Image (cartoon, rainbow, N blue to C red; front, top):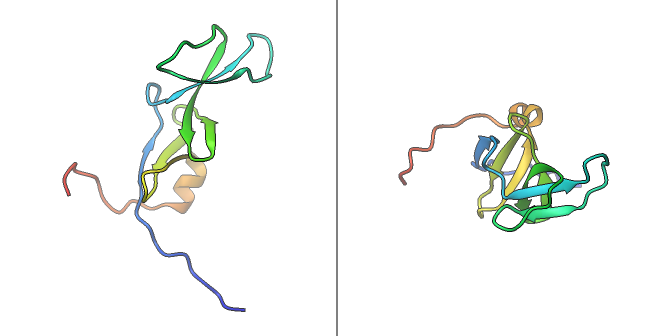
Length: 99
């Protein structure tokens, strides 16, 4: 069997803060049953709303200070739990807005 090593890829990432969400996961006030996901630019039910981001695979709930939002090489976004991110990624530089 042939062995392979994953190519190193540089990605952009930021620790999630409130206000960075794409929408919300909504739950009834006294229940943990998901009503659905709602983009923040549309009407949102009056319920327990938790921040969420939209990924290629669908919506994912995120928490401020608990998840990094990673932007991949093709612009795709996905959440990674802070502890896992910090164990598996290393900083290679700061983005200065230029090329």
